Amino acid sequence: MRQAGRYLESYRKVRAKHNVLTICKTPKLSAKVTLDAARELEVDAAILFADIMLPLEGVGVEMKIVDGLGPRIEHPVRNEGAIGNIALFDPEEHVPHVLETIRLVKSGLADSVPVIGFSGAPFTLASYLVEGGPSRDFAETKKMMYDQPDLWNRLLTQLSEMVSSYLIAQVRAGVDAVQLFDSWSGILSPVDYEEFVLPFTRKIFDRLEGKAIPRIHFGVGTAGILKVMRKAGGEVYGVDWRISIDEAWRVLGDVGIQGNLDPATVLGTWSLIEKRSREILERIGGRPGHVFNLGHGVLPETQPEQLKKLVKFVQLTTKKRR
Ligand code: CP3
Image: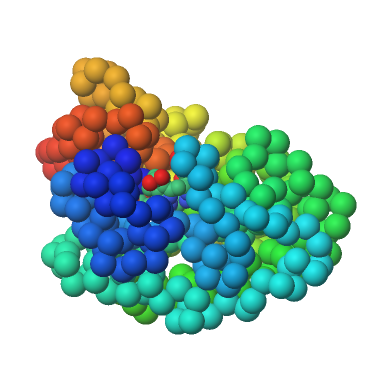
């Protein structure tokens, strides 16, 4: 995550001239930053440069992405009227730039390097819409969930339809895997996740069933809800560093797992980075179905050289095991 980001010189050059949304909406630029990052790091997969807010921006939700903070919504969505104002989503009409970026990225990459498409999940998208921006306690979101469950259902139904058709359009445009980012779902108790979120994430994974591409389900701080999240389906679960990866895998059972180095580790000495990465690989013990990555986005303070060294280290260590 944030494979392309401010820690990379090539990205900073593009970013000096354009804001994040403009880069995302200009296929030549977003394809360039996607490809530059994948090539510079020599990672095994490229992740599409986009933002989870794009489909919402496409249907007319006014927003900015504020440096160091994240999305900020001009008019938070807290009632029936505001939900009704969100247009029904049509990928070709509302996010043609994302689909074009995918085509450009695919044609610029060797066939051996897969491209991961993604979408925000309904809960995480709803949290930005309802709060109006990032939040610590998600009080407004939970208030709608607990106090106006019909409204919550209506909002999440609309968002899950949007997410399903967005991901299906990305598959048609050529992505090789899809990742559903439910970044903030770890704020929920298992019962609340099951009652207020699971039906919607499950619907999205169901709609992608039979598309013959891996579905990755990611969240932050999800150690306590992995068991219920797992009911949503998907082939791979992304976990952060707050849980040992072998323990997470035990809880999840027979699915692939992605993770889970703390991105801040990469700010440390090489010997610390190597030690922590080796520990993860040892906990995995060569079991097939592990995707090594950071438990969340690359931090802007990261030295690209350290990250490149980490990529090489993991590739060499896992090759030896195979
Ligand atoms: O290379 C890649 O990984 C693809 C790029 C990517 C971006 N956003 C571009 C971006 C991805 C995968 C996202 C997803 C995204 N966006 C998520 C889900 C994943 C996660 O991190 O949990 C969320 C919650 C968002 C919302 C968002 N957009 C946040 C929280 C921020 C950070 C604000 C900041 O300045 O730190 C953004 C802005 C953003 N989107 C950046 C990037 C690379 C930050 C860099 C910049 O300002 O240029």
